[in-house]
Length: 160
Image: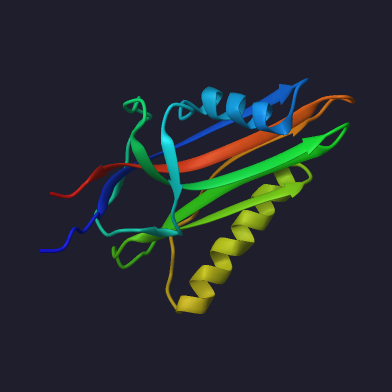
């Protein structure tokens, strides 16, 4: 018998942070603000399985291996940085897709990029998707500081 991890629940969370020490510390604080700094995050690609449902944020056990789609952007010294996630379901009810992105730029610019990525995923597959849900973060990093934005779609429940 093989192990099949098929998610049936997910939540989306985000955070932004500034650090005077390093971009790693800004990343750690952004994860903390997003509520996922105490988990071992494992990046996965962009498929939402059929019947997987969006749920409210939930605290996960410390050290839990946690599958997620993660968008992050790091910057320093006056950079404007943004990252985000968009997800949409297939109109035929057979799951959905996630697009992530990051850039030097604004929340509005990353939102447009994410919308275009979802449209391309739809076009490439020859399917119709629902209107995407977009979650994004932006921060203007002060001079002499480091900054980070993170947005993550976190799989938090699995089928038996």
